[in-house]
Length: 138
Ligand code: FES
Image (tube, rainbow, N blue to C red; front, top):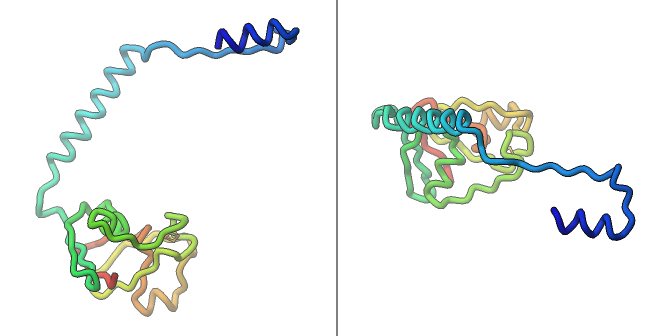
């Protein structure tokens, strides 16, 4: 920043238009607050019972994984190294559409799937969270 300031001064820049912003060390109160949040998150992770996990099976790939109810089908696939195509990641484009062979999901899409596709058993994996164990065709 000093070098830039010196260059500007040497080249006649109107320093009335020069603005500089610097950041100092993180205040102790903030560091303590962050540490507390990290501890809470770690405790929450430990509190997850194995029985709370839901199984997501990918039938065509012959792979399955257990995930938290808050995780998406797409995240489950990623954990297994399965790459379901994805673009928007928010239920708009329909790129991540897969067929749900069994089980139920909570799908919060934004118009990226038709009612007909839903009736035919398709889901958008990026915004679908299993309500129980599910089997997906991928
Ligand atoms: S990636 Fe766009 S709807 Fe899932």
